[in-house]
Length: 263
Image (cartoon, rainbow, N blue to C red; front, top):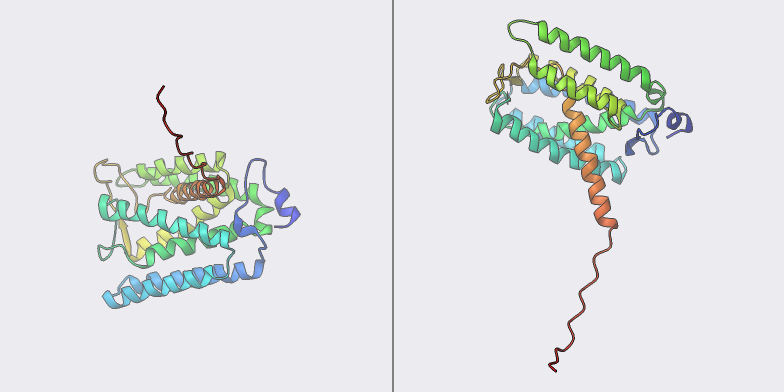
């Protein structure tokens, strides 16, 4: 990361490991490939049978694994942990809870890999020097746009998007007090673009009322991009915990007890 970009980070905020040795050209190529790939993949999957559905999943995994070979070990570990966390949440949110459902009622193979690609693209995009220099303006713009979008969701018939309001509140909390607000802003914009595109094609659909909570939700909820704030926080905590564990020396072996004598 350049000195100028580092200086653009507010005190207490952290850059992500994707910023190490970052070059703009490869990041823009990755971003363009991500956009094109998902435009095509979701369009194909929207009417795919079982075989094409599987092929889309395999292609998405190939994309992720190929992209990870070009990243540093730190980034590969971070993305791998995010994929595990995101997949767990997908199983709970879709298959168990039913807050949303995929078109064929399964957890598509492209979803875990898609989370990894998405996170890698967000990490690298948020670490671009010319993005970092505009961090404050980007964070404020996205926060205000997210707020306006949330209000629109509350006023839109037939039901107010209360899940959108709840997730918006989580987003604003992370944007105001989180350690990587620029990453959250980038993730929110990318998430909403994917959500609007995927739901418009019927690849997945949000329940109008969350099962068990009966909380009205939009399709998609207006603040659903906050999910990546939570997943990033969980990922970084998991990585930090692993590092602390590796650096902590093992406790010394207990000395064998000496012979017991009786007086």
